[in-house]
Image 1 (cartoon, one colour):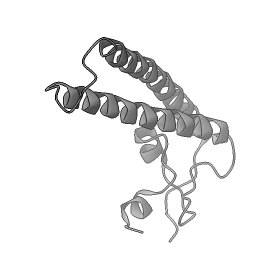
Image 2: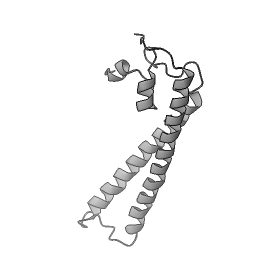
Image 3: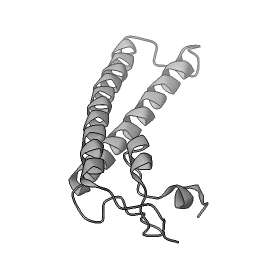
Length: 126
């Protein structure tokens, strides 16, 4: 399946570069904030009761720590994907769906700068 969308123009690429750079800055800030939050959770529990089984707040603290850790991991994956797309932006095959080899479309890439599939292929269950 090949998309009927036109390839990216130089104007599209400039707009995408700005969007990716802006999103990368936002994700970098998010990573800093999540690391700070994680460190605060750990520090707050240094002197706390370490017996989670009998501490009514122990389960909540463990959940918060796990949740922040998962958010941090996802933010780092997003950062890596954004950096990779920024590196590929000027290549002729940037914006080509990895499944059907049709064009993803500038609108989709602006909305989701890490997209590697067109909307049709992204909606399919593989």
